[in-house]
Length: 392
Image 1 (cartoon, rainbow, N blue to C red):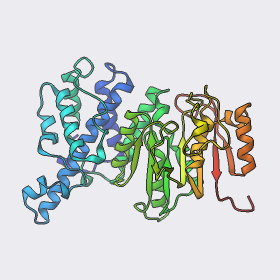
Image 2 (tube, rainbow, N blue to C red; image 1 turned 180 degrees about the vertical axis):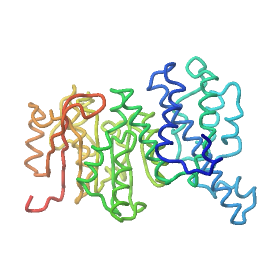
Image 3 (cartoon, rainbow, N blue to C red; image 1 turned 90 degrees about the horizontal axis):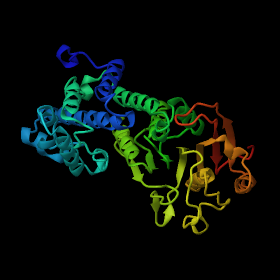
Image 4 (cartoon, rainbow, N blue to C red; image 1 turned 120 degrees about the vertical axis):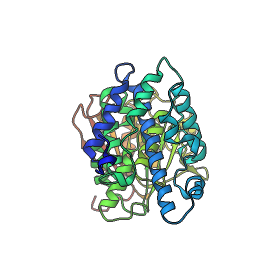
């Protein structure tokens, strides 16, 4: 249905169905982990284009010239030059993968905040992305328009994108756990740490950004100013980094900082040679991962003062100590861990004793098994607090 022809507002249910049927176009010829990216990329380009045109028309209605409205990049949050607009893709009939790559590169060049969001996947591979499939995908997004004025509520677009992430996570199973934490668990973490306006909030293993987005929603729901927040994160998977940035933009978040890299080996949220510190740290790190612990004894950020975890399958306490080191003097962290961190012996037992001795644990909440994508083992929530009240 072309909603714009009937002057109907796009509902959340329609948008969910529309986005998921886009995946049907590529399903069967590609694995879920491969068709996730083109669906999200084309969706993102269409959304950027439609909101760009919406803003241009608004500028014209306010008295700006056609040239000023469509060619002055400083009038737009995201500027889409003529050679990268949706009409270029919708008219294409051949070499569509190369054209998508060109459009992605142009949009990123014009909008530095989108660096790496669109160009992390190459579509000029006709064996994987044949012209007929890409043509159908673009045609699918020709209608309806995705302007803010076309939506029943502006926030449904971000919600629909998270629905799509959840569905892709469910299809990819193990890989889904790399980028998606179930929304109910994310809300639990956020409700436990109660973020407030003015706070600095970080997720050092941010995946698709759900913890940061939910924190912002919480502040808004409790009548705080959601724009008065520092939202930062780091992600080691380049594709997940792109999804995170897309997710933030599609939720209307303009001011954020997401860095790329391995947070244990190369933390990027650093200032003046020291780790940045935050009021709240929320995270779901990869359970029982290998890590390179050889340089931990000389760590320039002094993150491992409770002890150095073993190298094989035991990075858990390395992540936990990084997150604790990222808290300011009043900071609180909510961290999803495997329950193994509560009872495993040897070096981890020593680390646990030192953490308990310093009295930074505010609470531990056991979670049921089979709750997360990619693992059936039961998890737990570890609540750390640098500023516990005397009665605790």
